[in-house]
Length: 151
Image (cartoon, rainbow, N blue to C red):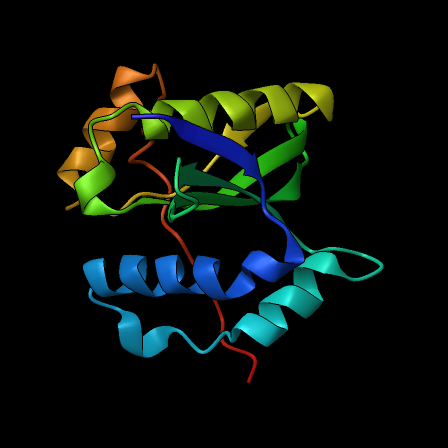
């Protein structure tokens, strides 16, 4: 199977949002998705983009995976690439697409002087944890996540 990994473009917003919704459904949180393709397009492709992404397409142009990232700053490490979401449609898992996307993210992080790539993974998502460990990642189970809704 031939897969093309490329940067997301503005016109991909609807397809990427479909993947986001699939991921949210898998994580039992579809109700929490309020982002629209229009807002995604505005946020990612304006004068000051808030995120970037890579997408994976099959030979016939079907988008089957995505990795969406943005930059963070660590007072301990400096510039960090934060992987917000990595999602591969179930029928396309086990073909190396996750590794291809991660390789692209690693190269991107290196080219933009990032010290590391960070992300979160749900503790019950065993296939994802195994994938991350397989590529040599450390899964830190010490830190707790906090957030505060502002709207």
